[in-house]
Image (cartoon, rainbow, N blue to C red; front, side, top):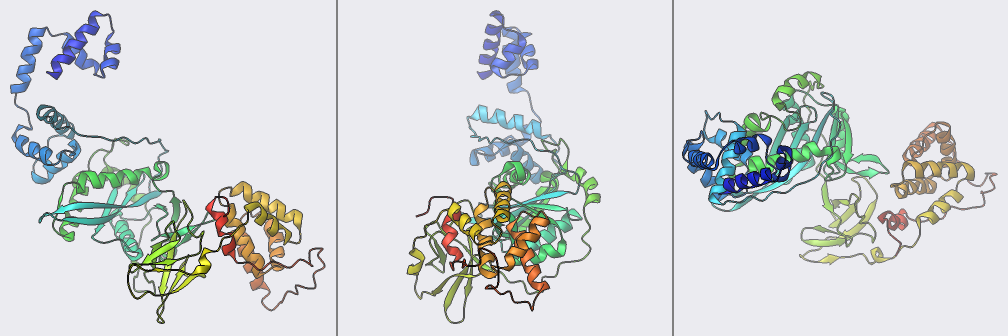
Length: 515
């Protein structure tokens, strides 16, 4: 019936004087189809339709199997049906496009609709062989044989040039150690290591970007120093920087794992590797128009060789981490513990590192070796809120006021203002982080920080982190020299640096107006 309607519309538009191109555009039908329909009389077209309904097709032997899959899983894609046929029938060789058409016809004939969703992406420049791999995590929940559900976690690696993929699965959340082991398995699978790896700001890999300078977790920092690959952190759900691996995560979820029955993790891993071989890395990629495994055979020569195995028998320990909630509490063993108001920052890393002491206390930090943010006595029950009342105090100051206060504490006002201007130009979105570093330096070394500023300006360095490194270098060069804070002849010598905790300025980093 649908074909008859299309035939009728084509003939009506033809009689009205529409061109072939105009009809094709209006009805969204290929020109070859329009030519074919126009060359048939109504009687010939009716005969052709009945012939197509009775004519045997290559996939007819699999009709009941495919129809059963579609009825059971109405969201099944044609590509996934093609993969399942290859998995269940060893000598299946029919092309994917043929399977797609057959599935589409079955959906029309048996009225099995399929909902689709769309997302807009922007084309990015292709990278050279061996330069980059993208890494991302995914979660999915699948059915078990007994009818229950099983949640699974996975990590995906994609070589950016060849689109060659690697997947590893766990039936529990990943730890940093698991991530490191997955990297080693991926490098072995690829036959080498790319120069750069792209990640989300995941708490297993990175603590945060400190004023745009990356701070890795202690465990991953040690691993990165051994393997010496460069790291690029990007925002979550950012298709411009890691769209390749985001597509791969969806491909794994919706082509491999969706509607598949879970028996055991070992069997699931084995099925995943076979899927990569026959489909994930075998099918022609829609963008490159090449098969990933064929391109990888060439790209493998450009990967850096990994000659030695990474030793896990070291002092790396798995950090206890929790996310800081919007109400400035963390959850630990079914209880909630407070952190200072303003600690939570929208669109920032909100990971807290916990340490449980032998004395029954819980210490909370923002980095594994950072200052203690909160110190609580561990609750004995469940569902309790353990709160330090000092965490509720309000802090009121503005970013510009803080900047002016910092400027007033330096000896050379003109030089520090020039440095501040460079910071604003280079780090417009991280100015609060930069000021926090400067404030800490002024509290620690109010005199020697001026020497560090002089050297930073000479070297044309424009980062608070660079200034900090220069200050520590000066301290190491003159370990026995004690700076006399009262002997300076600077016109600002009479000004004492106000003693104030950096917590006072955390509210600024939230990006809103102070309370």
